[in-house]
Length: 442
Image (cartoon, rainbow, N blue to C red; front, side, top):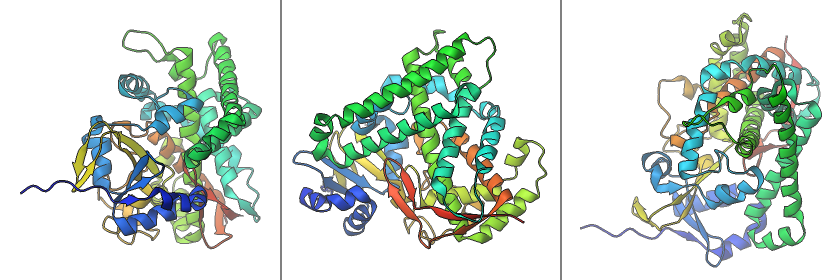
């Protein structure tokens, strides 16, 4: 006899509002308590007629993003809220529009094209690491944030963008993301964000970013000789009918590259540096591997950064920069005895999935060697998402991070300043108070 699927366990809107201030600061402890009490999937009532389903079930995640991904779509958060700031690019588009853009952009991020950018990446990395002041307690996040943003900017525009423009674009990117966080976590204040003009001011900042990028594109179109950078690659792409991207589409994709290309990387690098500081034995492993590689070519270096890769993966397991991924159900469905209604918004917690005791041995421990085995982690490890919409820039990010860790370990020994690693969950999972000491390596 077949049993009807049960309703999803519910956390009431009153409990939500009672914890609103704590959720605004850091929602992860609130969600963790609900997962522990109600199971791997629960429903959070956020208003009189609105709710969100939270899940840490890897099988449901893979169902929505891989196995039956056509039955799900991105949520209102990305297809409307984020669009206000970055437009209709690959990250925010849906359906046929997304398929067309993905097919167009995919070749840009093939390994052979990323290889053309590594020299520019490496120079930017070395330039930023040169400015680290040794033997002083330093907040490491601004260092890695500036580094990651400059790497993206130089990879996109080469020398066509100056440091002042880079800083302005970085400021605008961070301001608009903070505004989006406030909109999502304080939906009851949206009327005030509009009435006060705060929302309008942030959208005007996005327009300023477009103006900066537009001027760079205009100069590039008029240049006699152009560098082989990401902008050149994007401008030369053609659709099946032979046409190229329109100016608006090009601007949208570039704005999204700035957000997706720098924020997650800077977060991951900061967490990696902190974990290395707390676990010096892994610093030694990376140093030994790095010193065994004579500097020949960047490609040669990348072939000998396995220890760095293990550490980076373990860092992204414990502190995934993209710590939530959303989807909406196009139709009602049942899963593991639970019933999901049409248009249900699902928020998948990668932070929780990466720490499940039934999936990971000693999940709270930092053990990079777990990634040195032949085990396939694709059913439980999702630092770049999964399925057809897996992050298109994952190879770019991994190359950049391995080069940073390689060069960092060649130059420094890292020491912690505080016992705990603090987090700041915003649109991405950010580090907080990431103070470290960098001592010149012997």
